[in-house]
Length: 331
Image (cartoon, one colour):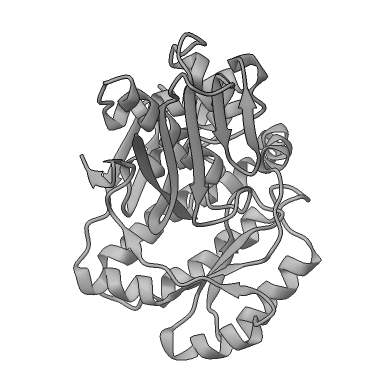
């Protein structure tokens, strides 16, 4: 049995510039980090003693005779994409520490973990760059999903990175290397809050993509904030400036589409600011899911209490990215 372990991500700045419809014309960049919350995908060849060919376990349990019958689109098309057929039975299980469709890059994290596990099952080791390209191709070309390209990169590489998207289509990962105390200061100043709802990111993304040219000034400003944020992280001044920058990028992001925010999200955001947050943003395309807030540690109890109707999710940064385990032992 092969098990992949792939982290979810928090995207700070530059989201929206990672859509190929944008960066192939303008270039783009995103600042993000992965956290210690994971998607697990296990797979094995199903022994030929059962009355089904394939068994797929996610929020449903599928027992089917052919790949064509698989309901989960990423699994069905991913198996075809990687050259699997019905000559051998397969069993695939998906488990996640965080809910799907919540703004943490869960769909791309799953695709990365699926490809990594399945290629290992084929007896092949896949490099990070190839894994990113295959995950992007599966989502954007095969499944024709309206998704950007940042989540696949973050989940694969792990860590705190600036991900550059060049006009040529090339993707470059630049780790943000800062002293450990600075990393801990950043980590301890962030609150992750689950709003308790979910949405289809591709629908929101489609609306954003349809209006990219009308939002050029906002997207360019959001791209510049990546460089500003890196300067703050690399400096010696207060990280509170990063919180203020998060507020600015949220004000821009919420203007990209009417679907990005709603009254409940706006109320929660204002409540957090009133009780001590300096800034924050909704993660993912928008509409629902997780919000991240920059809050100095001494003010965090007040913010958590004020948002007690929502779920506070403690986390730490992680640096490994997508990895493999074999019967519980790391490769």
